[in-house]
Length: 443
Image 1 (cartoon, rainbow, N blue to C red):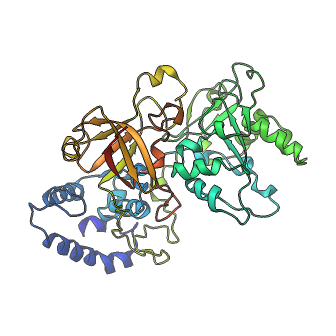
Image 2: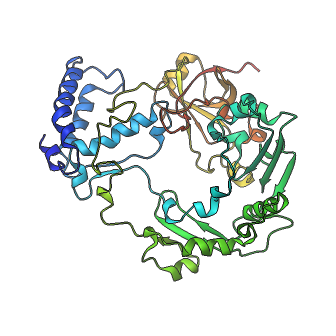
Image 3: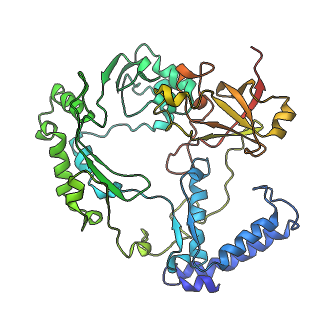
C-alpha cells in the first residue's frame, strides 16, 4: 500500500479503496496453491522465481518496463499489454523520475496525416478490410466480392497470414490485380499489371519514424529510372483518369511536404528547421509533462474501467492449439520481413530456410540436424531444413524471416502456418500464437 499511496493523485481513489485488498487476497490464494519448488502451470517458471521478480520490481526505486510489441501478437495480446501497463501504477513508478513504462516510440503525430489521406473527399463510407484477413476477404467476401486489388509498399503473398488462402484469392480469374513495385515479388507474379516504382533515391519524401522521435526530409538524388513513378505520381494520374479535378491531386510531392510542414504541431515546436530542410534527421521535442497526460475521462489512471467489456485486467488464455510445438516467427538477421530478398549477396549469407528446434524435442521426434522436415498444422505444410540448437526452449520451434516462394525449399513459406485469427482487441495479428507439428520429410 505504501507504493500505491505515492500515486494517489494519479490513480483513482475509488479503485484503491475497493480493489487493492482484493488483489492482495487473490495473490495470496494463487501462491497458496503451489509449493516454492513447484513450477507455475501458466509460465513454467519456478514459483520462487516469480516471487523474486515481483519483490525486485516492488522494491525498486524507479522501476521501468520497456514493453515492445511482440506480446501483442497473441489472441490475448491486448489484455496482456493492458495488464503489464497497470504494473507501474501499482508500485507508484509513474511518480518517480525515470520510472514507468514505454510501449513504443513513434513520430506519427508530428504531422497531420488527414492532409494526405483526405477522407473528406469520400462521398460515402466504404468497407475496411483488415490486412490480417486478406485471404478471407479475397475468398469469402461476397457483398459485393472484391474484384480489384491495388498493391503498393507491400508483398501480401508472402507477409500476410494464412498464405494458402491468400494465394488462392490472388489466383482468382475474376480478380484484377495491379502491383506497383521495384522487384518481381511473390505478389507481383500474380499481377495483371505491374507498374514500375521509384526507389527512395528517385523521389521527394518526408519520413516519420518507428522506434525513435526523429523526422527527416529527403529529396531525389537521381532522376526516375525508365518509366518508374512514385506512389504520389500514380495516385495523381489515377485521380485525373477517374475525373477528380481537385487541385490537391495536381500538386507535387514537395508542395504537399511544404503544406505538411506549414501546419503547426506541438511535437515540431522549436526543432532545427534548417537541419530538417538540409536532409538531416531531426529529433522532435516532447512535452515535459507527458507522463501525467493520461487519456481517460478523469485524466487519471483507470485500472478499473467500467466501460470496458472486461472492467479489470485478468488472465485470458492464448490460443492453446492442437499441435505440440509453438511456432515463433522471428526476424531474420539479413532481411526485413520479405524485403531485401531480391539481393543475391544477402541470400548467400542465409542460404537455407531453417526451422530451429531444441535437442530434446528433436531426439523425441527422431529428427537430425540438417535434414529436411515439414512443419504442419490445419492451415498447411511448409518444408524446412532442421537446425537443432539449445538456443531454443523445449516445446518451441523458430522460423526466422519471410522467404520468397521462388527461394523456398518447397512451394510455401512460413505464413502458410500463421492464422487469420485476430487479437482480443484492436484487430491485430496473432503471428506468434500458432502451433505446429514437425515430421521428417520422406521425399
